[in-house]
Length: 307
Length: 318
Image 1: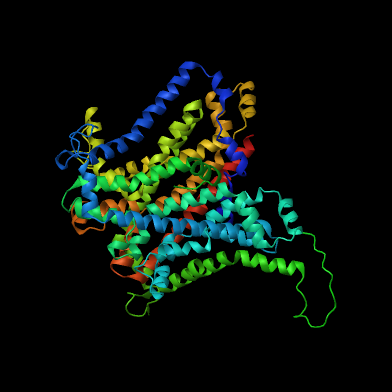
Image 2: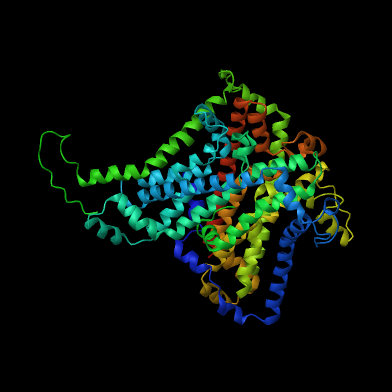
């Protein structure tokens, strides 16, 4: 098991720098390719890109049409009905959900980033017997399906009287997470060790090494961890389904599911409300991507992260 | 680190100032402590608890009642479990190869378009950023039989689109179609792997007279086999645990569960979730979880074995 995970996790990773270099465009090779071929490739990609974008175009356009026109053919928001967006804020506590998602997302992302960096520093800096074995165990936990620990974890939070609070949505992140520990350790290992030894000679304590030296130096990797976890938290439905009853504690995905059930099929068939809600839930993620695109791409390319 | 500990022979062992190595070990432990605690409390502990619960009947309100292997016996003859497992495997068998093939195709194209690469890469990644609940909602409507964008598109080329959301035979292909929209991460992994292939390998192959296909077959494929293997495993594990999009579309609402063909859309983890948190069959659901773990473990090990052979085979050939 361990070896499988180790290999799978390490296989596409060849250090951080090479992967970053790999994202640069190979220009010279392209110049040699015949022009018609390049045109063909671009055309094929453009076709694929249109296919991938059409669902977005339809979503935005349909969310801006009156109820009777939601399913009308075409991609233009005509007749134009921006009031759908004011309507959705009126019928469900969307502001509360947005705020909840933001708070939970920041808590989850900050907790996992700091704790994983702390642990990663332990694995990268210290040499102790059994280190590789223990690190193998860290990697092996990535294979454990969520379903196996889901019920006992629920019982723990229930025992602590913390169900129907948002605590279970982020507090588990305080203990680090295998993937981020792995990612951050990779970055830490790429730093010259002399750096830390020099600081030790100058009398810095280990926590100082971590906070003053390592932490600022691996900032790009910390951002990768942060944005990934923020996105994971923002899009998670399962945990809010398990832990939250009170609608005012809901995060956006949980709220959006309520919107669908209440205003979609089997409900009032007010699809314009459902669609406007979906756009509101999606836009922050799109903005996040454009702000942190480099970190997302790097995170996937170096760590081979899924999703 | 250079350890220059001078061992002073003081008899009181506990009072002695700890050696550098020891102090370092203590600090190492302090740095690893969060993970160790988290592992014990949220992984190892729950695993043991879950294994125990799987041998009991437990409804949260009453204390667990030991029933031996009853849950596992029941699992084997439960048509709902068989059905959801069948659906999940069917989905995985369609989703994983399709995602890998399409992503490889897109990555190969992306590698060849020069400056436009960044733009297209962004386009393919945007669906991955879309919250899964929103993806479920969006595709519930795109897959609508009469008014959905997909059947409208099919009508343009003269195809009478199927009832994606209600015909039991078409529910799963519809879900697979939805899943393909979010293949962006796999594309990026392949693209990074493709760009890591040293160019002189291609040049050497060309000098040896290798054509386009031969270069792909004997240079590209072996060189990116690590990435292919990685995505095979990760995508398989993720597909076997599919939950959010499908739950959003077809479950959690009694009305829709009747309107649609929820049976055809029951994934294993959805069924497990319902057993645990709707019917409070915590013991039974725990047994289901262990069966899933076992299935994932076996499939992963088989994939590792096969890939070992694949790698060895490549080594032989060269």
